[in-house]
Every structure is written in C-alpha cells, then in structure tokens.
Image (cartoon, rainbow, N blue to C red; front, side, top):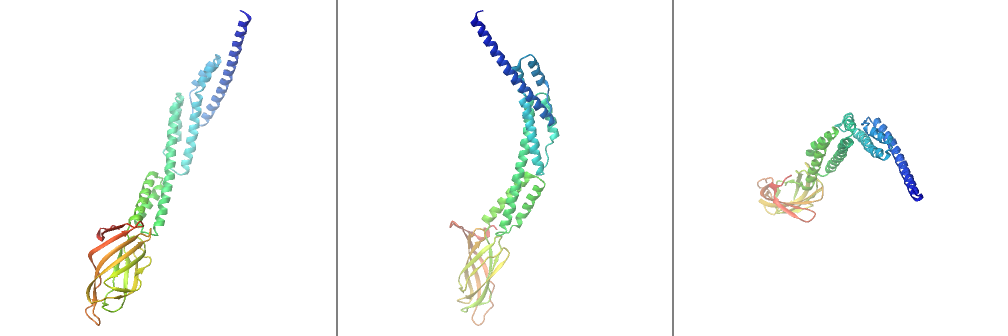
Length: 345
C-alpha cells in the first residue's frame, strides 16, 4: 500500500472516530434526558415499560450509539405524556376553584394512562390525557359564559325596571341564578340567553296602552271645570300623554307628565260643549313611551251626554264605540295602523 493510500485510510479512520465520538456524546445526552424524564414521570405517578431503555443499552454496549439514540427518541413521548398530565392537573385545579361539578377522576386517568404506557403505547396515553384536558377547558369556558350571561341578565332586568313591568321575567332570572349556583352550566346559559332575548323584545315591541275617563254632567255653551283621568293600563312606563279633541272646545293644557304602569294622571281643563244632547267626541292621544321615546297615536271616538243650560237630564259617562284605531310612530317616521283589539300588550 503506497503512502497516499495509507493517508486516505487514516483520514477515514479519523473521520469515523470523530463520528463515533459525536454519536457517543449524543447517546449519553439522550440517556441522561431519558432518565430525568423517567424520574419526572414517576413523580407524577406515571409508569412505562423499561423495554426502551433496555434495547437502547444493548445497542450502546455494542457500540451502536446512533441506533441507541434513535431508540431513546421515544423518551420524548414519555416527556410529552408527563407534561400533558401536569397540564391536566393544573386545569382541574382551576376547575375546582370555580366549584365546577367533577366529572373527572384524576386517579383513574393516571391508571388508564399507565396501562397504555406500560405497553409502550405513548400516543394513546397522550390522546386520553388531551381529551380530558379538552373536557375540563370546555367546562371552564361554560362557567365563564354562564357567569357572564347571568350578569347580563341581571343588569338588563335592573335597567328594564325603569321602563317596563319585569315581574314575568323574574322566574327565569331566578332559575338562571339557581342553575348557576348548582353549576348546571349549559342550562344556565340557555335560560339566561332566552330571558335576555324576551326582555329585549319586550322593550322593543311592547306598546303603551291607556284608558281615558271623561267627566260627567257637562253643560252646553258653558265653560266646565273638568277632570280627565288618564290611566296607564299597559306594561310600559309612559313619559307623557298629549290629547287633542274634536267635538269639545278645551281651554288648558291637555297633557300629562310620566305615568307608571298601573298608575293614573289627572288633567284639569275647561271644556265647553257647543250643544246639548248625546254628541260624538273624537280624541287623539299621543303617547310617548319611556324606553326609546317612541310615539303611539290612538284615535278614539266616544259619545258624551251634554246637559242643557240651566238643567236637563243628567249626563252619562263617556263610552267608546267600535270605531277605534292605533298608529305607532317610531323614530324613523314609520306609521303602523291596526284595530285596537288586535294589539298585544
């Protein structure tokens, strides 16, 4: 063998030795990491087969450091399972802090994971752990949403008291709070959302409704000091009611200030009937509701018995006939007319 060939062989030997040294160092690091992960896993009560380590040691002792390293790469799966289990413990601890109903037994999960890991099936162990992490996170998410929805519901109830009667929504409010207290989270979310929707519809759609009572014993051609009673018989708070009349001359302000549901207001004016007898009077009521200042116009025709000057038959209380209609005027200027008997309150 000539000198050149000897040098080439020497270079190859040095290169192989350098590669072997690097593979040896890598293998030692992999073995050290595997041992640390093994101890960490045991600290969490997780076990796994020693076959991986034993196979790697066989290759190591035979000088096949690269093959031993490849086998020890499975140690990463051991570490992933350990990290996953620790994350599950943290997530369950957060869930316990919210007093969420326990549907997960950590001891059983550890036992089930160990069965997979002892068989070397690390991916199934991790899938099992990740599934329970997902369940727990979903429960925490439901808790936060339920808490938020109950808060929105309660605040909406409180704000709506200023504008409408809310008694019919209180049972749903109480049911949402009770379910949340018992950590029945999905029913809580469902009840609260439906309750919120109902209140919002009531605020938007409930139309104010009033009852007018005109005075008795009006005398024709004279100024009669008269009291008109305006009663709020609907479920919405009224900011004001403005009246106009045809058939009776009125002196004074035909309007009210705010009227709460179930309450009434009195308008004192001077009324001057032009003739005695049973006369028709058309009354237009413009009602402004509290929630959004929407105006509702009601046209109603009533018949009023008017006394003759100086005496005559006593007059009768005003009564409405079937010729009545309502016009709803919203902020956009849209009018909607329909018979009163078909209105929903």
